[in-house]
Length: 56
Image (cartoon, rainbow, N blue to C red; front, side):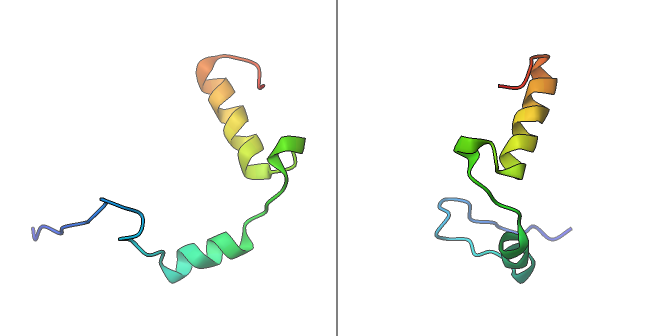
């Protein structure tokens, strides 16, 4: 197996793939301060389940 070196020293050393850029462009977004960001809401729900707590 050929080893591949990946530089994770800084986020300025890596570039998103076209698929990553497309996912970012198409992502649902909203104001997390008003509980309107679906990805933040899902994250909070999943963390609450993992910790056995009610969502904040």
